[in-house]
Amino acid sequence: MEEEAILSHLQDHEEIADSGQFAAEKGLDHDKVVNVIKSLHGYGYIVAQDIKRETLVLTEEGETYAAVGSPEIHLFMAIPPEGISREALEQRLDTSVFKIGCAQASKLKWVEYDKKKKIFSRQVQHVEDRVKDVLIQIKDGQAPGPEDVRALKTRKLIAPQIWKGYSVKKGPNYAPKRKTFATDFTRENMQRGDWKDLEFKGYNFSAKGQPLEGGHLHPLLKVRQQFKMIFQQMGFEEMPTNNFVESSFWNFDALFQPQQHPARDSHDTFFLRVPATTKELPEDYVERVKKVHELGGYGSRGYAYDWKREEANKNLLRTHTTAVSSRMLYLLAQKPFQPKKYFSIDRVFRNEAVDKTHLAEFHQIEGLVCDRGLTLGDLIGVLHDFFSRLGMSNLRFKPAYNPYTEPSMEIFSYHEGFKKWVEIGNSGIFRPEMLLPMGLPEDVSVIAWGLSLERPTMILYGVDNIRDLFGHKVDLGLIKRNPICRLGIY
Image 1 (cartoon, one colour):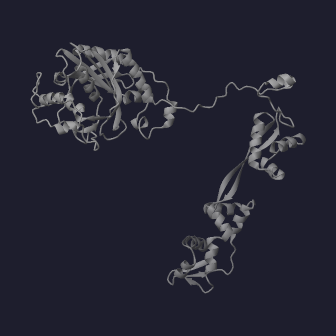
Image 2 (image 1 turned 90 degrees about the vertical axis):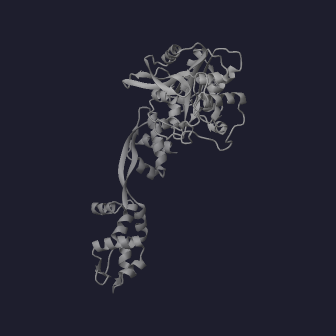
Image 3 (image 1 turned 180 degrees about the vertical axis):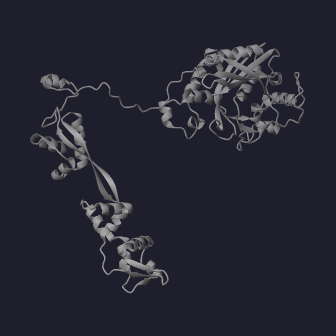
């Protein structure tokens, strides 16, 4: 209806000067007219020019005054000719009406207040509610004087509103009726022979298709997959990491970490209430671990304390994936020895304060090589090979301390962006006090290293707050938009 009215009108007239006036004359909805104008303009049937006008509309408070009158008129009418006390007047009016009415009526010199007697009295006999009259004029579409408009705007009884419309003229493709373009070439067109007269809709080769709805890989998963591929290329076998809950024995004791170590405090470790303890530990191995803690052995003096089984039985959320490594090495020791290369990438949990670089749960990457006669030189060589595949070939090592590795080294790489050396991981050779109680041969050594997954991911994707990458506050848009991971961090 709207389209027919516009095209028919332009057939006999040069233009439609005002779409709003046109819609009112034709009894049409202006919003529908505007939509049709935009469509016809897009196909070149018409040429449309914007029209903008500022109109005045009543606010919610203004609508109330237009309906029932202004507060000043209510206050004036509530004062009898002989006057009235303040308390009595307040009881007759609402609090807001009394407050606004007093200010406006006093300003207009309609009333006077005697502060000594606390009495309101009229100063004039008759008044007109100019505010209500002007508000009704504006509501009816009339234009009041500038002083009235200024006063009502000051009182926030009216507000400007931008009206948008169009002026319309014939376009280069004008026709009294819109043409229907064919979108398909069908069998029926061939049979009827009308395909010769068909006009086909043009193709827009620049148009984008509808975005596909589907799952999206998280940046952590993409970087994790790249690390996994690097380990597999180096011949490593992935360890099973499906046990988030570990016993303190595998998480600490088997790694020659003393029971009084600060890491075992509840401020650093999440202990479970149900089930609080484990009942499945290899008893002969537990006895050997107890002995090496209390009395030493294999060249070590031990820690010289009373090792408690109840501490080893406590269940916790694993604090590192090295707990998985201790299980795998123990299983390896129960068979005829074969060299192995293991890796794991999975979640660990620590009771840490959350900030922009720390979370209570994160991912740890760990690699280890188990073979005869391995030395510190082998560890450094493997680390150079591993990190060079990540794009980090400029490495330095610094001596460090770990309860279950000796020697131990922190790994640093030179960051070209920061122009400084940055710590990227930790490494070491597992101590004999850890390996020999498992039953591994004396000439077998294990070299190992670890790093986080979040830090390289944050560097790769330019994320400066870990909470924007992982957790309940993560932006789902980031998950959909993140590009393919290309390792080569530095």
